[in-house]
Length: 445
Picture 1 (cartoon, one colour):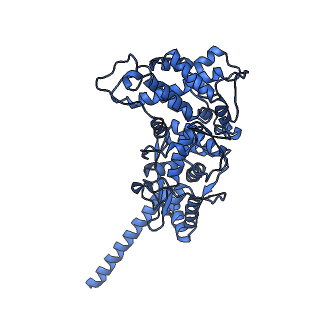
Picture 2 (tube, one colour):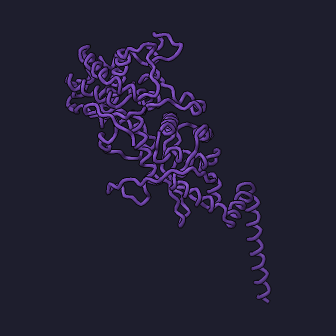
Picture 3 (cartoon, rainbow, N blue to C red):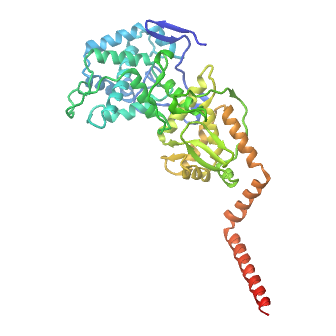
């Protein structure tokens, strides 16, 4: 296992946890890995060939300072936060596979950047919690942008920084939404406590997950994970655990998901249209695993909402999974590859959307098909044991002779020439009626 370094009550892995996107994957969709407005961490703190003033606008630096002002944090509190972050310099630096310091070895400027990064993410969490009851003219409109950029692999900060920011805000007395929003107009009666680090991570995972119907009420103890981990690692664990959920487990009883080893085999899998012609039906399932009901010929898949945000999340989860040193299994790659095999064109997307498995918020079915086919570009596709077994079942089913005849009949006489089939049916009806009339006439004599 990984060696863990203890620093006070904090724990850090001795090897980097915050990687850069593999070059091959970046080529497939470079925009999926670049922040829109907010740069978090050192990777985008000093972009090449970018004037300082322009960069201050691009990375939302002025908005981060406004956020600190809205939290009523004085220069003294900010200095305290900077100092606490500077004390962790060796451990924080060790979490990044590449450290960019703008041509200087002084950690001070980056400590200030990291402090504002952490405050901005925490403030976005505050803002979202108060959406239903309060108007936040300064922070809330930026909450979605913060979330959109905080899910990127190269835009991560260790969660220990968020914990430090929360402690600074608490020491400043900002323990209620009224304190947080400063001079904003709030309705009376608001008395919500300061969110914990667990609340911040829960908010991040719920809002970033491509599977909005999955419920997440509680995280594993944070002591079980090193605090050098980025937020993206918690989202990855959350999605990965659900995608490997045992079909026989009971979520309500608190059963843990069963892990299965990773294998490199890549069985063939017919498309959704081909499976549909072979008699396979599609149905969304409440669990996160992929299953096939052989008795009813039903393929069960988790329901997913596909939007522009989903595309970015999946790209970055795939990139994060590719950087893991010893993953128990490649669950994200296996899931994306499974759907990539099912989706080849518009007809396949239509079947999956009509069955309720995919909620398409991208626009056209053609756009979704093209997007999904690009997800696996430059990615080494691997399958979990459970997904491989389902693929093998479906492949064997589609090769059964009578199912091939059925699929051929449907394609030839129902899809391409439906009127021919109706004509044959009408001719048979006329023949039967004529035969009955002849028999009736003979019997009459």
